[in-house]
Every structure is written in C-alpha cells, then in structure tokens.
Length: 212
Image (cartoon, rainbow, N blue to C red):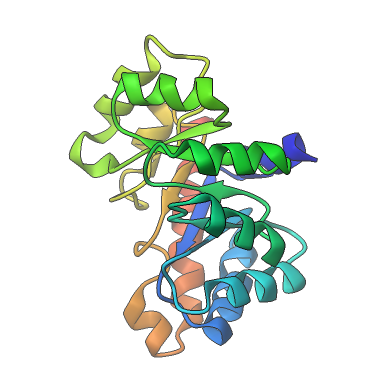
C-alpha cells in the first residue's frame, strides 16, 4: 500500500497544495484539480480545520491520494494519519515525523535544501526529499543535489508553476509540489474553480511534456 501511494504521486508528477483553504472550498478544489489530472493533494497542517479537510477530501476523492503538509511534529503527523492522510510532507528534517510515518506505513516527503540534509532525511527513513524552498536555487539546484544522490526521489516545492515545472522535471524531479500557482487564493475566494482546474491542467501538461 505504501508503494502504491508513492506510485500515485510520482506517476502524476504533481502535488497540488491547499494552504488556508476552508473545508467546503477544499472539497471543490479537490474535485477541480483531480478533474485536471492531479493525482496527489496536500492540505497543509497550518490551515484551520486541516484535519477535517483531509477527512472530507479522503471521503470524496477516489482518483487521487490526499496528504498533510507542513507537518512539524509527531503529534500532528499522527493526527493527520487518523484523519485519513495517505502521505505526509515536512518543511524540515524531523525524525519524529519520519518515525511516525514509518511506524504506520505512511509515505513521507521530508524537507531539505542541501545534500547533507537530503541524505540525512533519506537515511532516517524518508521516502522522498522535498527540495524546499525550490525557488531560491531553481532547477539547477535540484540537478546538483540529484547528481551525487540519484537514489533519492526529489520533489521541489516553493515557487513552482506551469512556467517552470518542466524544467524541474528535466532536472531530475520525480514530482513537483505546487501551491498558489494552482490553488489561487483569489480564484477560490470568488468560487472560480474552473480557473483552479485550468491552473492545474497547465501544470500537469507541463510535467507530461517534460517527460516525453
């Protein structure tokens, strides 16, 4: 099951990140991005009622996996698992979160920025490394980490959108984490989920084209 969840994330290549999106809107966003071909959704734990959103999306969506992001400690990790999170994402190397993920068979992408942090996370049990913040180093930074560490799946996040997602894939990323470039706050506030769908489709198409 753990491998299946990882495959769903890497096969689609896009994790749509929902930060600060209310529960009701979260379900509508999930419908829109999944319709566009996204196979993984991440609700950040710093979102109000995040666990309720995770549970609602998990109950609603069959064609994608839903996970929790910005997981800072083991307690939050376990709460997310119990709410139905199928993967976990951290912004930093936190061994307590990694242990909790491993203990209950939940894939975890651990935030790191340097090769040292990346190998520490992987050796501690991370399934993938979230290269964060990606925008400060760009695709070249991802390629530089992947060069000596090809065994570590890299998921750049932060400043990734349709205009550069393909560059990250060509640099070696197995998937990209995309927040506001897909889940635009103004579009969500206006209930314009068609715009969210189109944003998501643009990123999905960029990743697919880079893999050809």
